[in-house]
Length: 164
Image (cartoon, rainbow, N blue to C red; front, side):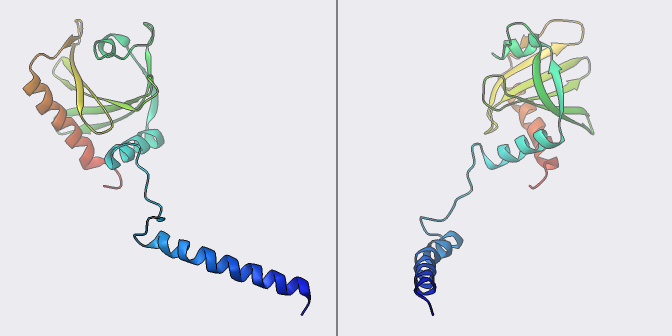
């Protein structure tokens, strides 16, 4: 056996001795184990991924979103959307990244009124807007109604989200 092979074998042995505990720790609960990194809530991560993969690029009118604090200097807001029909109408969720963070706008039509909710990636309702078909958008003043409708809309999406 040559000197080169001997040093190569000792180098490989040392590598196995040093790396094996780390590899074993990655499979168990050691502090060196790689934890899944969630930038959002786990459900938020899944919804963002679903919209990014299956969604369609679209532009939303700025009026209602401006009432929620999302502006693009008066221009339409670029979003990525997924929409599905439910028993009580069409549901749409939009992923907005205009402020360099992921935000969701959940919306559905109730008669001639579109109800929109701005939510963060932990599914907290931040703002709600009513947008009549032939009128101007306005803030929803009834917070109990807004929260109930928001919960209904996110419940709709939770039941359809892949990987739940």
